[in-house]
Image (cartoon, helix red, strand yellow):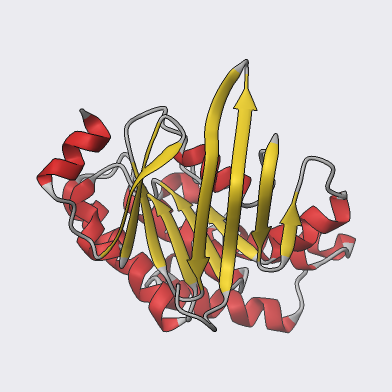
Length: 250
């Protein structure tokens, strides 16, 4: 990172333990605003745990995590976590959409973290929230499906709804955990291109956990590789050399 470039994510010496196992091991990582960082590595390497640590879904046993000037710690106040998570939009591997609600309702759910009013739980949102939801649906090309129930959509369409919900949150940081899982290769590329486009168009920092290395040219301007909880590869650009593949997966 060049002098003067602000880190939106900064991890120093981070360890995370669970069930008697060290999942992240003395991990250092800085991500600057506007980066498109992809995290790769074998199953069980700690990729998803790293993403969860950035929003306090798992807490470090030691080390320091700063995300958007919020400190993540094992003793963090609930109010501080709520403030952090309102600033970080997430696309979960399982999407976590409400199947029996409409596309429109699911996108508006992205605004709940900004409100304490019980009216929003009845899906009565202010005009600005509705404007953001409309803009998000337009960005992913799903305006024509706004009144459709989510459980009637295809897998690719559901992925787009999850992206729209994250966009509607209007957060500077977007985290996505294997956002193309269970999609066929063509649909996966479409979603990867869409994520990159919405991140670039909206000046968001994008961090993705990626299983298929074929998607890296569409998503990443920077890659880190994790193995056994440690970063063993860090590079700019979307291409991984054969020797690095052996280091990660051998």
